[in-house]
Amino acid sequence: QVQLVESGGGLVQFGGSLRLSCAASGTIFSTYIMGWYRQAPGKKRELVATITSGSSTNYADSVKGRFTISRDNAQNTVHLQMNSLKPEDTAVYYCNAVIYRDRSRFDYWGQGTQVTVSS
Image 1 (cartoon, rainbow, N blue to C red):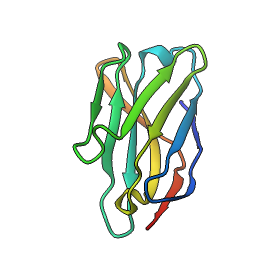
Image 2: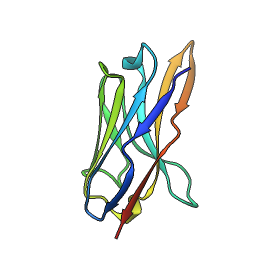
Image 3: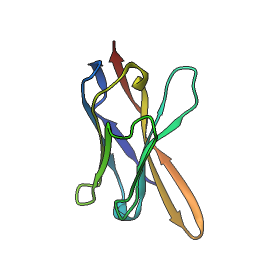
Image 4: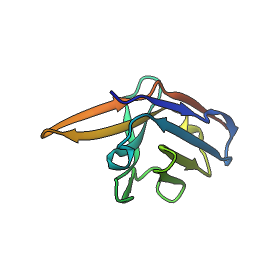
């Protein structure tokens, strides 16, 4: 079982910045594929960014050039630096960990942290 705890959400003005953090349990964090997803009211949860164990990254088109995902394997944490925030970035942001074990995929989720961008 992997536990994920997000922090860093809040209220920010248009054009501002926030940094989300996710602390993960487990001794093999370096092998996890980590990601951030978000869900706005009335919308489906969507991918924001992912980072592999080798630190390869992938971003949704809507956040490319504005958001940066990074990981610190020594601290079992993953971060999402969000710059140039827009009102449409308003959502609950969820940390995700993907583990492959015995040919099966296991997904773990944090409780979510609210990000609100005012216009």
